[in-house]
Picture 1 (cartoon, rainbow, N blue to C red):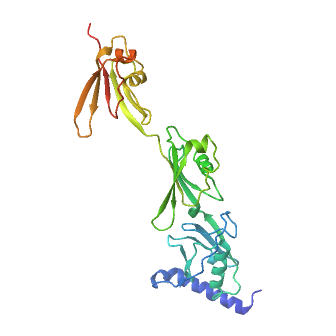
Picture 2 (picture 1 turned 60 degrees about the vertical axis):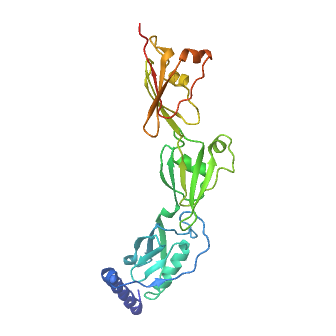
Picture 3 (picture 1 turned 120 degrees about the vertical axis):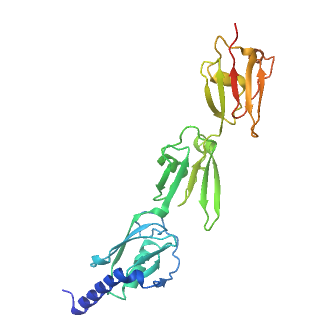
Length: 299
């Protein structure tokens, strides 16, 4: 059975709590608590040394006092606000460190409080993956994760990925570090030095392969527009091959190339495809948005 002194103290605490919940927002600035920076903790989820970060969702419980249970999200400035206790700096503290701090502040109202904190959402330990992956999105990084592990979590690489992966890593403040990873070395050569360990808030971007668009029409079997890799030059002959080749009625001596220029002007020139095939004439390299027209022969 609780002593009369303890019972009075608890009744007083509940009353103060109710007042804080109703009137706290209108009583002006809440007191701020300065705490020393905690040593770097591990990222093991649920561990006592897990280091709390911004936007983490915390459930704070006090043993025997259910009315003090609160679920709060760490603000962008690293603080949380609790009834009666006001503003507390939470980011950077270990989970056990924050438990001790909250317990110390509660000792002003209740004797020997037992505080337990559960991390419900590890928002500060998330990594974003975008670009040429199958499931772009944001993923929780609970424990150390490598670049390949995160790419796997994102469903693997999608089609038309480029030659590198870029990691954008916040350095604090407005600065961001850019880390380029050679994709061939990472995936095909299995270079362990390229499979870097990621850090919370990293942004992984897999650029798509840069392409140019060309149009092929007229007396070809598959007239259409075609997107081809920018780093693989496309000639007139290759473009016509992509379009299934010419039909029987094609006038191969009069293949027309229409070129649109950035200033809005348009030029055209004629290519003798028969001479190109025989090696008697150069096979021109096409530029983005070129139009290849194979006219029909007049009989």
